[in-house]
Every structure is written in C-alpha cells, then in structure tokens.
Amino acid sequence: MEWIRQRLDRIKEPFAKGRKYEKFAPAINALDTFLFTPNHTTQKGAHIRDAVDLKRIMITVVLALIPALIFGMWNTGYQHYYQLVEAGVIADFTFWEALGHGALKVLPMVAVSYGVGLGIEFAFAVFRGHEVNEGYLVTGLLIPMIMPVDIPLWMVGLSVVFAVLIGKEAFGGTGMNILNPALTARAFAFFAYPTYMSGNEVWVSEAYEVDAITGETILGTLAAGEEVAYDAMSMFTGVIPGSISETSTLCILAGALLLVLTKVGSWRIMLSAFIGAAVMGLIFNALPAMGLEGNELTNFPWYQHLIVGGLAFGIVFMATDPVSGAQTLKGMWIYGFLIGLLSIMIRIFNPAYPEGVMLGILLMNVFAPTIDHYVIQSNVKRRKKRIETTNGQIETAV
Image (cartoon, rainbow, N blue to C red; front, side, top):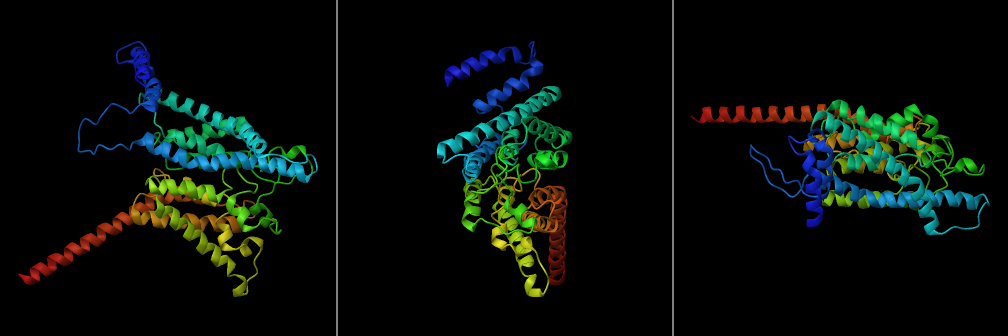
C-alpha cells in the first residue's frame, strides 16, 4: 500500500494548489479518497472524530446490495433458459449457464450506469470546484438493479443523465436532493419509454425471440384478472419474473439485516412501511366480508403483497435514503407507514400500473420535510406547555 501511496502522491503533484492542473484536482482527489482515508480534518467548531464517513456508509449499502444483485443475475438467466425449456427449444441448462447469461446482461448496464453517472459527477465537481461525493456509489448500482433486463443501454444512460442532472445536481448535489435519484431514473424511463418498462416480454431476457415465452409478472397477471401460478415460497425466494434484483425478498432481507446491524438503514422506516403495506392489504382483503366486490388484486393475500413486486426492495434500499427520507424519529414512523399504505393503494387502484412502491416513495420524499416540520413543531409546543405548567406551579408554591 505504501508503494501505491507514493505513486498516487507523485501523480497528484501537477494537480496541487497553484500548479498547472489545479482546476481538475477534484477528479484526482476522488481516486485518492476512494483508495485511502481522507487526511483532512475539520478546522473549527465542535466535532466528534469517528471511523465512519460517507464513503464507508456508501460501501456498506453496496455490500448489502450484493446478495440481491448476484441472485438477480442468476434469476435473469434462469428465467431465460426456463422459458426456452418450456418452449422445447433446449432440453436443460446449468446453474453456471444461468448466472453467465445474467451477468452478460446485467454487468454492461452497471458499467453504463457508473460510467455516465460518475462522468457527470466529476464534471460538476470540476465546474463547481468541490470534491467528488461518494453518494453515486449506491445510486449507480441501484439504477440497473431496478430496471427490466432487456432495456437498451442507451435508455439506461439517458435515465442516469436525467436522474443526476434533474434529480440531484439541480438541487445542489449529494445531500441536497429531495427525490431519490435511483427512483427518479426509473420514473423517467417508465414515463418516457413505457413499452420497454411494462408488458409481458420485458421481464424475461430475450423473450421476443421465442413466441411461446411469456414473462408477465405476478402483479401484471393479477391486474389482468388472472390467477397466479406461483406459490408463496417462489415469491419469497424470488424465482419469478421481474426487475433484475427486486424479486428475491430473502436476499433483500439479508441486505436489510446488514443495514440495520451497522445502523446505516433505519429499521423504523422499514418496519413501519411493512406495517403500512400489511394494513392496506388487510383492508382490501376484508372487502368480501363487507359485502363489497373485489378483484384478483384485492383478494390477493395481504402477506403475499409484501413479498412480490418491488415493495421490499424499495422499502429497504430506497425509502431508507437518509437524504430524501424523514429525519426525526417520529417522522420516520409516519413516513414509512404512509409509504407502505400508498404503495399497496396505488398497486390495487391503478390496474395499468400494478406496482406502486416507486410512486409511493417519490411522493413521500416530497412530503418528508413537511412531516419533520410538524413533528418538530409538536415537540416545541409540548415543551413550551411543560415550561408554562412548571412556572405556574413554582409561582403557586412561592
């Protein structure tokens, strides 16, 4: 490591203050801080020195995403080859063939996401004269993980451009955005290119090449008024069609455990969001008992609503975004509960878009500051009332 340190110091010399390439220092400093702990310290004000910084938080989230990413690559290949077996095109396939096919599909999307996104981040850092933030380490991986497998790479790149420019840099960069950048990218892709983001063929790799292949998701099947052919265990483990890494609730919960144990992700938001989703699912499940007519989505068991679609992935990895989410403890409970509630409500009421977690989270991103404001004001009023009561008691005693 000392050799790398010396070489990096030598490379950085032309970028030092007052030197020829000083303007481009943020770009080379980003490589330095990625490899080594930053050596700068705060110059004024009270502060606590801690081993945890933004880079380590982001890397922790990336590690939490790895199980869902690897499973997503395998499931991409599995769904592709399984449908070919069903169509009689091939006789059988192996685990490694499935993983290899998925990797060839997913890794280029990850490369495009990081290449385009980091390029814009570096350009803005040089233009504004500040250091490159590590926030895109997570966003760059999240964006391809929530996309359909066969979406063209140029659409991924364009979605990244929109997310970084409009969803983040327009508000001042990392730490200033009001919307989750990854969900902003997906929302752009969904509304700009709906035929590539919905339908039967987009969820199974190369489904368009074989007429017999149908890759409709569970929610799409329910929205069409048809019965689901998958059991609850398949839904939980994730061996079903869907976006690349959103299908396996098991792998997502493994990532959630890491986030909770390292205190990077808020367990309050996760728990309250699942409670909100369960409550709304139970309400719709009760419709037949109330004499009201339901449909396949309303009759779908409430607990299965929690393990299909992008609900679990959105709650664990995007609703818990510390920048765009609620900050107060009570606000986190309210914020998470409403995300779960709205996600199931949108999922059921909008048959043309039977997945509501994206819109649910983005909507609550907008209202998160308002929730925190009223929570804080409530605390202030309560404390003022306590002070007035205490002062009255003192005056009476005197």
